[in-house]
Image (cartoon, rainbow, N blue to C red; front, side, top):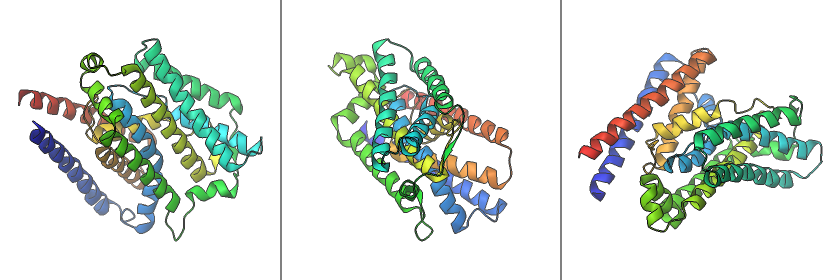
Length: 318
């Protein structure tokens, strides 16, 4: 059984890697600007936000859950950090710490709504999405905050043309999350609950606690994403990260994580994030309207879920 599982993982990675390579080849021939150093560096910086959100989303979807609030949490967290730095004159480090704490608390509240009141994740996170986005518009009356301190902007600054700290943040977040999922008891519990929640309960796993922590992790990842996005744009506005939940879910599902939970890896999520980022970049280079881009992303999600359903049915028959 273990051998078959490894074979399925290998096949899954090969499939999405081939898709990524094919996508790059197509865009290379359809746009002269795609395979340039400047554009590839832009892609790496543009996917950073989705990469960070998708890490937290992987934990949630592995549990068989969903988090629709991530984009709104990023927006309100960015604005809160802006207020701390610009209006309250707090040091950058203190503002970042409080921003991460703020986003994590939102994740905790979401987790408690789901585990304490037995709300479906879809309903709880949909409600939190509306609350957080509404708060983002309310706290600044819809006005943007911009011109941040240079220490804050240095987080996403380019050195030798390379966004060094952005890439470093992505690597550190990935390594920590991958270690947690693969080598800790908590990670094993995540897969166990996603695979069969009832069996996990019977084996003595505190399912509610594990789920609650997962939403805190998702909130924390949103906080890190808010730091990176706000620093890169040098502005915090209520509309920041609008639709980010769609990109994150697409990246996780394309990367091979099952929407039913219990199966998937962060390596797959990375590849999925790259595919989504390159698709978005390619569509922009080809001057495809934003509305059509959303349609394409939605279609990709549907296709990825269909592939997952077919794959699971085949594995059950095997």
